[in-house]
Image 1: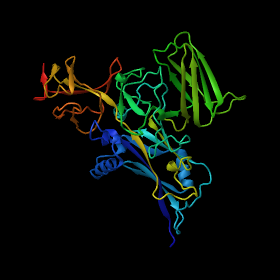
Image 2: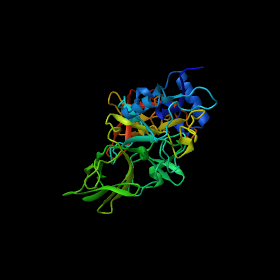
Image 3: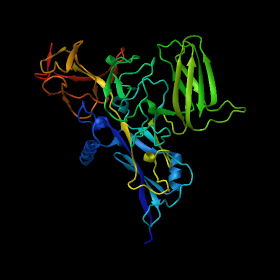
Image 4: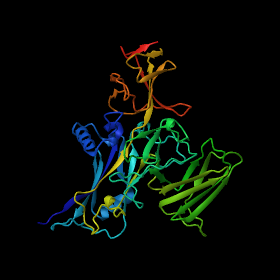
Length: 423
C-alpha cells in the first residue's frame, strides 16, 4: 500500500527535580527507575509537568534545514520533544526515506521563558566563563551513563573555589558543597544520590568572543590563554595588567595562522597559566550561532555516535526499535530556608520546630540546606524520632546570596500556632 510513513527517530526529555521530587531526602534522580517512571506518568496524567513553562526548545536554523532535507519532523512535548523521520514503506526493518551517508549534527536551542529557572536550578551563579549548558549524545570517552546526556561530575580540584550547591567527585562519591569552599574537608560537603545530573562539566557552550573571570582571591597579574583542538594549538593570547587581573576579554574568532583563518565551530580545550602558580584547563564548545544570551543552553544530537547506547541508528543504518530516549536531568538548587515575620517581629523556635530550624537574627533558618521544590513537603528528622511537620515552601523567584557565600530562600509569614512563636 502506497503512502507516506514516519517513525520516531529519537526523543529528548528535559526533567527537573524541582517539579518531580516528592521528598527532600530522596530527590527524583536518586530513586529507582521504576519509581521515577511512575512519578512522571502520574504528573503527566494530572497535567502537573510541563517544562515548556520554563524553557522553549527550538531547532536551530541549521537544524531546520537538515530536517527539511532529510524529511524529519520536530514534535514538541510537555517533557521535551521527539524527532520523527520519514521511512520507506514495506519490509520488516525501518530505513530512512533519505539515507544519511554523512555526519550530521541536529542542534536545538534551550531558550529561557521563565527567568527564575536560574533560582531553583543547581547552576553556578558566578562562573569563570559565561558558558551555557551543552547536552550531547556524543560520548567519545565512553564516560556518560545512558540515557543521561550529561558529562560525569569532575573530581574535586584543589585550589578551586566551589559555590554552595556545586558538585564534585570524591572517589566513588558525588558530593555537593554546603558552603562556599576551596577545601575538600567533609564538613564543607555532603554526599548526594542524584544520578547523572547536569553539572558544571556541561557548561561548555560559548561564542568565539567571551570574558574569563579570575577568582578575586587569586593574585594573577599576567596570564596566557591557549586554545587547542586535538592537542594542536589554535591560538594563544597573552594578557598582562597594571594590577591584579579580574575579568579579561578573549577573542578566538580567528586562529594564529598567517594569514589568520576563521575558527571553526566545535570542541576545544582552553589552557590557562598565570603567575603565582595559577593553572586552569577546561573543555569548550565554541559556536557563535548556537550561543544566545537569551538561552539556557543547547542540545546537540549526532546521527552517529561512538557509543551504541547513544546512537540513533543501528550499525546498519536502520532505525532503532524502540527509539532511543535521552534525558537532560536538572537538579534542584539547595538553599537555606529562612522564615521571617511579615510584621518585622522576631521569631523563636518551638519544641516541634527545634529539630529543623534555628534562630538567626530574629528569623528562623533551616539547620541544613534543602532542595527547592514546587510542592509542599514534610520536614523530617532523619536521626531522631521527631514529629514530621509542614512549613511553607519558598517561592522559586526568591534567592539571596549572603556575603559569606551561603544561599538563602526567604519566606515571609505570620506566626504558626505550635510551630513558630514570636520572641
